[in-house]
Image (cartoon, rainbow, N blue to C red):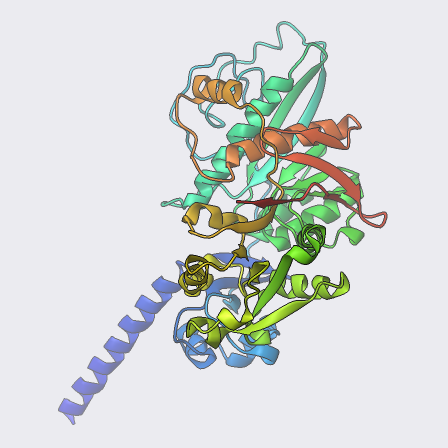
Length: 464
């Protein structure tokens, strides 16, 4: 009897230790609030099913399906994001605090993560609160018109280890500051409110419920759909424009005060179709066939738009391509445009060597790629659509960056500092009545969508 008790006690202890370790592991998943319910954002791992996800999170499968209804139709896919209920009460945040600082010198200190800050842009600093001086404007009142703007991005300022994405957000912020300094003039003083939007809807909700944004004339930023929907509703009620630098899936018909920079799948597909039709009979389109469930949304949209534009294409089974027996689908006299089934490089890279082999034996081959693939050094001619189309002289800008921040900007494409610069310039131009701007990296042209919000219509097909 005593032996059994010892064994049962040991098993109970092991179970408690396992549960404690699992609970600690769950703390590492991002949290969000969906319709007032706190959830984990979990990225599905390899070789894991819905049953195992439920066991790991101690949540019934029915609860997971309730928050992720797409699972009823197509099941679980590796890499997708699932919402998992935490079953914990939602704690409402208190009113956010904003610290007003006036910067009167260009001394650059190490850049901490931005806190909620108001940054007058007479001069540029590395980040909010990196140099705080007494307010000298009180002694000599400024007669210029003051334009207050807000920037909301997930800087991850409360996380111990910040991700590479947070560094990109910092560069967007720094580029935006440079744009405001360049636009500063004798008649207008720009002030920028900076907020760490984090990953939670509660953060945005607290801002909307407070009076912090009452004097703001325009807002730029936000990344996550639930945050965008909440802020877009506030902007509609207060008639304040909201410029989205990354999102491309908000319903602009329902949000007349939203400006969306990224192009939609339909815009990109129509641009590519127009490019194909310009080449007439000199191009032969080849669609690599896979299961319908495996098609990305952008490729599915492209296929539909090709049919709408009357563009014919040949179907190439994926197995034939992987078996190096795809030559029969190539046209010896034309350029063969191969359309892959995925917009993710990590998925498409498996088939790229087989397409390259067709290119090496003399077939004229070009692939429909994605903008991010350009840095992957693919040894194939490519074609893609992009909103990053401008090619202006940036020497003056780079010199200004080095002088202001005493650091090198991240050398990647697209450059996030230039994105911040161009979008802030476009937002101010919008407030002054201009619907088109030529930036350092992007030409932006706003077109209204059915009396709703505004979409950047400057999408071009680039090849190399």
